[in-house]
Image 1 (cartoon, rainbow, N blue to C red):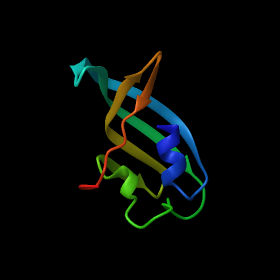
Image 2: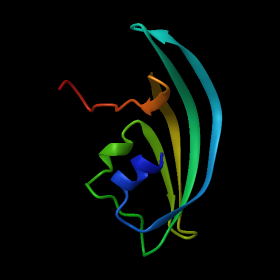
Image 3: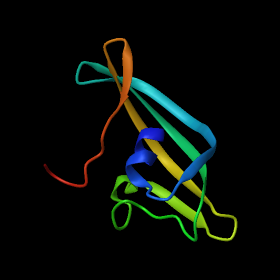
Length: 98
């Protein structure tokens, strides 16, 4: 999520909390996968949370709730991972056919 947030947010932010709410694993296309439902809270500086690009396309599969009064934003959704050798890597989700 840190990598996704770095690519998404322009405003300086601090990750306040990260929760794994649910998870499931399995195998498809000959490889292992893991999916977890998450909720993360970030605190940001400035008047509002700003994204690097309009509408935060990096978060199109997540719910983003921004509380401007407390300067905290909650991001909730599913994080998709696949096994790559001995490591796990995030699976990029595309906006449409490439």
